[in-house]
Image 1 (cartoon, rainbow, N blue to C red):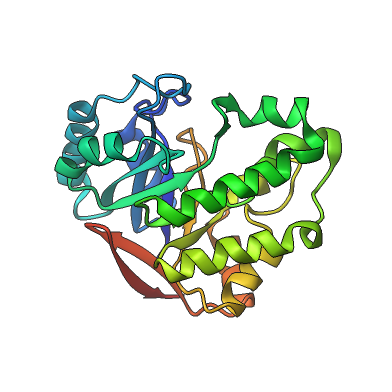
Image 2: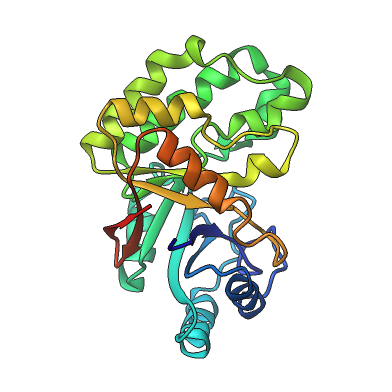
Length: 262
């Protein structure tokens, strides 16, 4: 089985202290064959991640790890963009020269307010606002894959429990159809399996619906911010993908999706 972790953060992200070379060593120890680093990045000065990324340093570490571990691990250069449908021209200007392998798109903020706070202040409509923002992102952003599709449940679960999929099924379906139409994939993010959520992001209902609608491009990522959890629950996610009818997951090279049989 070809194990790939397509969502990992290091100290090039504002919320991680992990050293890339140490992550790679742990990935090899955990029998992972390919890893894609996806550091947080935003061009919005009001976003928490703004100003942390120095691409020269990040890509220098990528090249160093590619050389050091080439016989044991494939290392890819990716990025996780915060609200990439906003300030699109600035994103294009910054990213075009970088020749990245993979771009994740995510919604972490609503109207420049952290998702966690938006949900706390206005939980009754925040879920709907979140999915609406996700639809706008998928409609216009230049991304490869939607990160942690139902991220809002991570912040709402402790106080409000899990959301009702049926309540938001219509807009979720709209998002998935738009993604499929624009050749944008979805990830199975395993971070929820390491928390009280005890489920992936997105939930199995969304993964099943994505498949039913004709979606094929699926990546798997631990969303790890530490060395210790690199590749966490990848085999669980592969089993889930298989159970939902997927025979392939995808890796990326220079933004091109490549199918890998499960």
